[in-house]
Image (tube, rainbow, N blue to C red):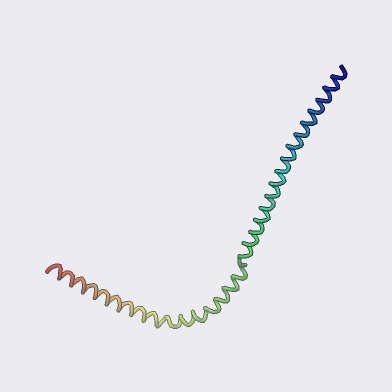
Length: 122
């Protein structure tokens, strides 16, 4: 009887050991998968941060833009002043030229319309 009990205990211990071994393998698989996913996520985050730094490096600071605008304004200012001096006289010249051109165009159009009506009527 004790021999049977001993065999039963040994077989039960083996079964429990096998279950523990199987659970240990399952846990290892899960942890290995988690480690791999965590490593991939860390690499992806590192890549994204690197790309963000690259994009950030392409932007120009506000002070650089303002200093560039000041330089441009300094170069344009004399041109604007010289064009404002000429604008008073040039404005009237441009106006008179536009009036003359519009009169010529309206005369040509009215002449063409008259010719077309004469042809239609005859």
